[in-house]
Length: 361
Image 1: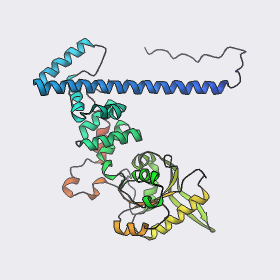
Image 2: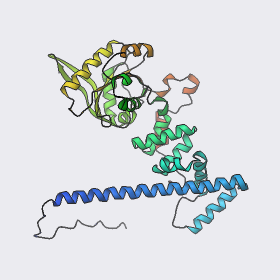
Image 3: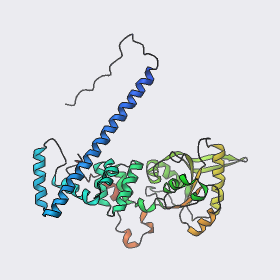
Image 4: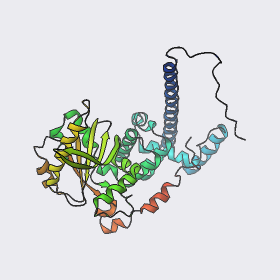
């Protein structure tokens, strides 16, 4: 039977709380939570480093002494006997440890980056990403964005490393240098909205509504830092009312982000419309501590040269990117067939990929 939950201990009767008691109690709670998180992170880092050290020992013995698969089986049995209270010493997991050491031979990289990720995440990187630089890119992006294991797998499947920082922008000319690089890396090209369901892709309002209906998936695709403010946000300028398709606030950039969704190819006239919206948001909504608002035009197609000419000499920071309902839309026919469908992907994500029935520790 599970242990009974203890009832909250009431304060002693007749004992009033002294002054500033609530503030002290809140500070102690915050400190306890922070320390518990630190202990968990420290324990995870120690476990990953232990696994890397074991994998490195196995790798060296295989290269220098010719250890084979049977030796790993025996090593697994002996470790399980020596440490019956520990899990994770199956032959399969030992092979993953060896793969970890082979994939990242530099201990400092493992210690500074990879040890901050759970073992689940490292398995996904080793199994699904072949290129070493791409693995490291996803590891660092995972730390910045706090992706779950399933979110990481989805980002890998959707080739996030090929799309981040690819939007056409004028950020270098319209923003301080210290902020322009971060802003550029915050935008992709193209954006993948493969969760739109039955929305008519020719009708912008239907696509907008579908994006809001799946706001969690939309925020995951947009990336870390985006907070949803509203859809069809009204703005009154000169006695006329305008509506913003989607309005976000980026907590790292400390700026509003206006997103205009177009179901047609890019038209230079969109830039003038966006410029109006950005000016209005800055005047009517921006807090004095906020930075100038950024605009993002999402179009079904865009000519890079035309976009660059349209953004040239513009003082307002604007980016232009494409959007797709399926990642395979721009791929050759023979490659499209090899990609999994959304249903297949969701089915795979529902299954654990860990060895030992989910044993990561």
